Picture 1 (tube, rainbow, N blue to C red):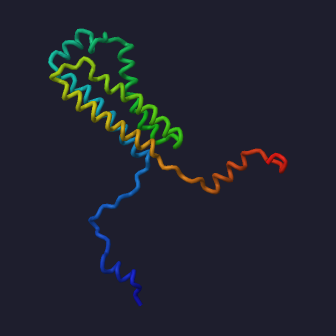
Picture 2: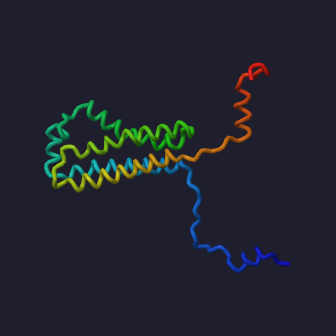
Picture 3: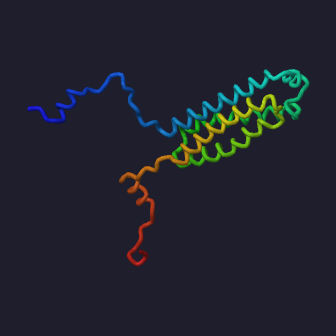
Length: 174
């Protein structure tokens, strides 16, 4: 005898072409966002070289108002190494540290992104406005993902382990 549920399943089999939405781990979302951010920063810097006179200025030893030096290149390296490391850290850090790290680093990168507009001429304002907007949107996604990181309830094993680490109390201390 068929149950009503099996009868419905036979009438409406699941479609083979319908994609299934699986819950993406927060760590994977963060790593993907930092990867996107990193590629965007690299390409923005690359396309910056297309501005008339930019390569000549670099050949002259300056970038924007800064003299090209080992210190400046070290700063540039750090600025791209941080999002690169955030890809790795987002996948490997424990949840609590991961959340805090992503919140702090994403917040610190917003003013860095906005600084890219410093000294831009008006004819490049749309380019810089657009690139900064996309960078900030990615950072906002990172902030939202880290801020809304689901809080799990402690498992019985975790609770038992935490109880084992607490000192025993006598009835007078309780």
